[in-house]
Length: 116
Image (tube, rainbow, N blue to C red; front, side, top):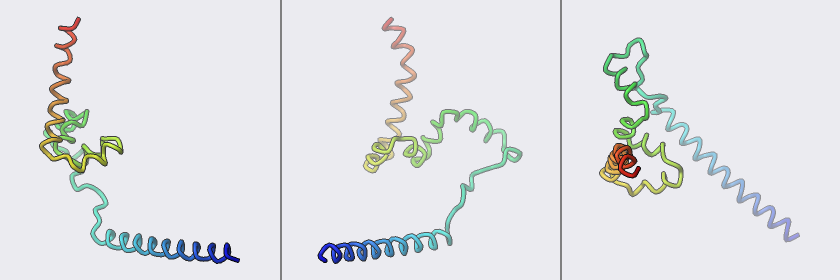
């Protein structure tokens, strides 16, 4: 009898939690539907792309310039535990880390030449 009461209480709590969850999701979907962006406004068809846009797109093969100018792109390129830790990273630290990584990659050939 006690297990039936405990099971009933657990089910009713679960149903209440699910109802609250469903309600929160519905509110979020309705709010997002009113003002949601379905895509980026920066997308240009290749037929309307200017020469400079095409040049920057081809130069940015590694995504370095995209990550330099967009914090969102930089964060999405990280693995999940590091992503969670980037909350406390300032913009200066982010760009400094990218610059130091770039400078280190540029000096690798000289280091290899000197080492061997």
